[in-house]
Length: 183
Image (cartoon, rainbow, N blue to C red; front, side):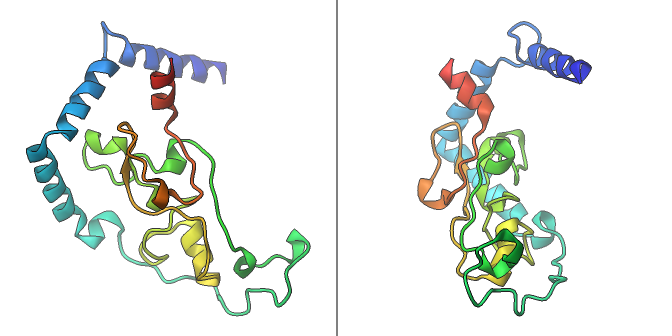
């Protein structure tokens, strides 16, 4: 375990040192400049929409749900987790890191890695349906269509572009930027 941690730390130092690798400040500045260029944003958006409009490209073939959803809600509110059924769950939430925030989940280029695709996060994403995107909330919505708390949509993380009204109870955070901006 120690060897793995040392290897990861060494790689981080090599990639983000000013002399040998990626200069984070310069990279972020470049990304910010690109995001403010209306021509680039329009062309990138057009290209990304054309590519992502092909359902097979992003999601693959849809799959039918393999389990029965009938009778999976209790008639009375369960008082024990041992009596809990999938349809009894009324709310989901997630606390976590960049995976929870869906960082780069739909990335087509390195710039796309800086987008939070919370709506497709495995733990709290509620974009689409189970047939298109397999996430825990999409599975639970098959049992309880009134499920609350899941996140939807995409936002830009480094420009504080998080769209809180679509985040639901997904408070995942991309920690590298948190530490970079904090220290």
